[in-house]
View 1 (cartoon, rainbow, N blue to C red):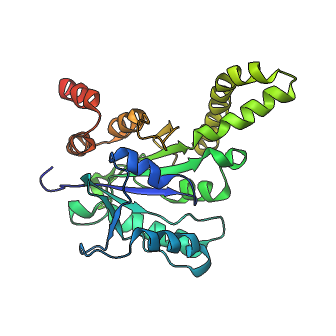
View 2: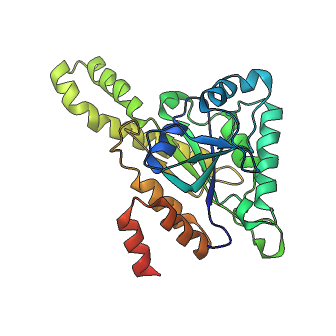
Length: 269
């Protein structure tokens, strides 16, 4: 833990997938992250970075090496991968090279420890596109491999289903289309929303499960725009899939907010 110091996560997903909001909840912050280059120098302001992210597909520029950190929890270091669509070869290659380089980095501090891959439910009709399939078919993060004889360190990929709240409206519309009265439809919409989520989650698991390097876990997230949002499932899943006890301990101590998780692992270990 002394050699690693900070837990490093690559956050992936399409534009407007709610990535920053998730990171704010995890770090218990309402502030925007500070952005540093690999040498610790503060670079772009967050607003400038957002502008770059919005245009990176057109301009072909996005520095995935930049580190995003929150003052409320400097133990976490995040890297933001520009969302890529199928056919965006340059962006995909940049991301893939970053993953390989940071999986084989000689310094333990520079290695990626986990990937959070965000799929927004605002695009529930296209949850698994060619871009997702390309990543999980071509990016081997040590999944299922014996890495003891290689320089590459295995790290888990977890799929985050973000903006689950977006399923409420199609659930409500579906009930209204069935002729259900508006008052009853509002009462039943949350239940139907849950059924829709289960259906789409099963679909995503089925599609990504057919890929060469499927994710290690899946976590639905909702109401992340609220400061009181519950993200304990994400913390639990990430801790569970880490394959090295030292990293597990570092993650659990870094996440700070989930006392139950700290107690659970203290008893287990």
